Length: 366
Length: 269
Image (cartoon, rainbow over all chains, first blue to last red; front, side, top):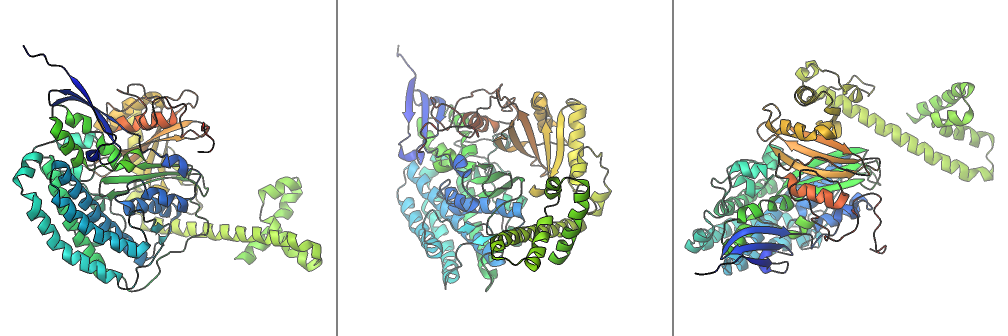
């Protein structure tokens, strides 16, 4: 008679495949997970509390540090909310620049995900390819605003820096070359037998569950729900451009993989159009009062970040500082489904499923 | 424009002063001050007066800026009115709290979302309870977002109705925020119907001393961690929550940091 006993295993907070300081306590029966309890807060910096003592321009750098893999979209959600509250007009050139950097950021963010996800599963070389190409985007950002990761680029009413001479041509060149690169990525990994056996059919859920758990981004679209805020509730200039919203069918890790790969192609498509229509000259800052003081009231705006719906809820009492600022962070909301997905899976699939959700801990903990 | 304002300012205080004590008159008609400053330099251009005068011109500027801002707002409202669909204007309004939105001097701009708000209020009153809705208004700042304040005791039933009623059908809970309003606590739910694209904001108020709002985790799973976060940072209790523990702060933390009266243990942090 073999005696079995449940094992309590602590994963993280310092563990490479948790992508940051995420901890999960799993109860194992052999290799099968019986129960999973996520523990968060190791990167909680109290951004929302700090924001209550800062004016809106001062809060922008804090948004960089929430989802540090996609700082541009975080910048945008805050300045967009304030602009909307104050009824400010943003010059077209500035809006174009914002859209271009946001789409570049989406490609860069998905590259990080692609590289690290495959690394988690055991393929090392894709990581090098992805980071090599991502580096070119970071170089472009560096030229534009002097930072590689935390840009602090957008301002209420426009952007801080205009595109330097020849920058647009460089982005065009990058976008042109990127199509081939994505094909290379697919050749390298997408059809790989080992990859397929690791991620196909793993961590599947249906559309109803996804909606119930409030998932967004690729996590929602992999189940076949065609929901992309760029299309469904257009903001910025997205209504001007043609692009498709890729959806999956089975809601498993493989579909999430495919959706993200296709999203990179669609972002390149948007970029091509935006770069073509990029206005020659013009201002990069609109007319903004010296002290940014939104009128009393409240607003909730949401945009599509690479990870899903990022939202910003501002309660203003007519002061230069927000009375209450709350961010809806897609990573935080998407992560909620994890304990449910893990039950009954093997320990190896923990890494696959967690990576498939694509979280950034800076955003989970905020 | 500023010329007119000054002239108006000169006349008004004269009338006011005859009826009310001077202090009150000043409070009621702040435009009186810039007007007074116009007279001073002409009659007594003494040196001692100079700083006083500068201060007043600043106020004058502020007044002018305010007037310009108001004019711009009015123009915007008029433009919005012109853009509004005629069908929306003709739509029946039960006029619950519509009076609030109709305060602006130009003809009341009926929001295209007003019928939707009225319908939601009606459904809640009929199917949940007569007193379920405390307030209802259109949040014009936020794309005319229909905003309801639901009575705390009725919130769980109301949430179920929001979720299951085919007209409302808000199957997606976007965001839950807790706000310490200093006089009371508030939990704000942003709801979305993925089929129709309709959005609502629902607020539930609670007492500040012993804040408690029924948990809607059984209705929307999304609420689970969101409610935990609000409990952690604001100290609002959510009866009915399956696992209400701190989520961001350490388990042994004292106090709830996002409360307005929170005093950090280490004042240097």
